Image (cartoon, rainbow, N blue to C red; front, side, top):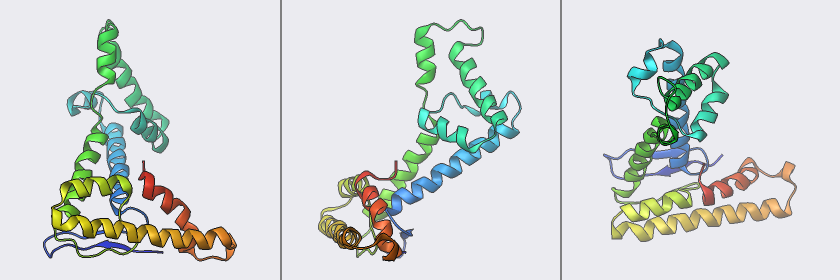
Length: 201
């Protein structure tokens, strides 16, 4: 498996990942942890927990993910709360209030947005030296280039180009070879290339 390391100065943390965009991998792990924590909190809390927690809504993507990782009882508890908030305490919410409730900020999205900015900052705010492995995806490349200083931009862009070339060479082997006889790196170049262009949504 490839290893991705993006070093900066001694005070900056290194961003590491086994394969694919290291920022996407970090955000994916944070997303799972946030959903697991939400599941735990909803499960152990009494009926007043959701009211006092400040949770007013959750986006469709994270609601579906939450529903897949939790029990039917915990999922039902959260869904009943969201329906109650949408209808209003006396069931008298009109259309405008129903839509307002559905557009509340998702706590998982808020957590991921902050983490994303922090991971981009780790690369953008330090002198860029080199990278190995797949480096960042196109979405995060744009964010890093927009956040870093001019002396870093060309080095970062070249690192991205080098990682594309490595994927190109691996895909060429996969295109002309037998899938079951090539290395694990070459096999994984398919999904890693997709992630390179699209991130890990």
